[in-house]
Length: 85
Image 1 (tube, rainbow, N blue to C red):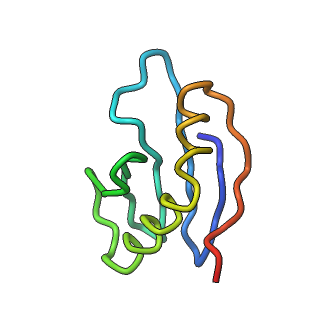
Image 2: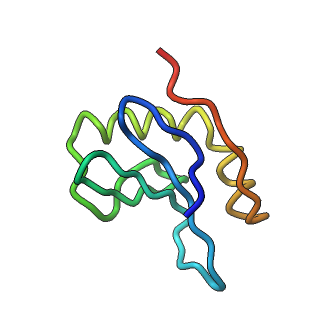
């Protein structure tokens, strides 16, 4: 699964396979925690990510929503900057 960015120990990845299931989403990994986040609503819809990590990931998603939607549609991964301080 290609890595898009990492910040504060959180790794953000996007995975493509034929007919990848909706909703459009990213995978976040933080230590032993994982979460799938909808790139439209910025909400975790599967996983066990701690609340503070969820908030940071949602903030990052909001900053990069256009680029993430483009990646999902084109299935071309590009590196994105980490969450700004």
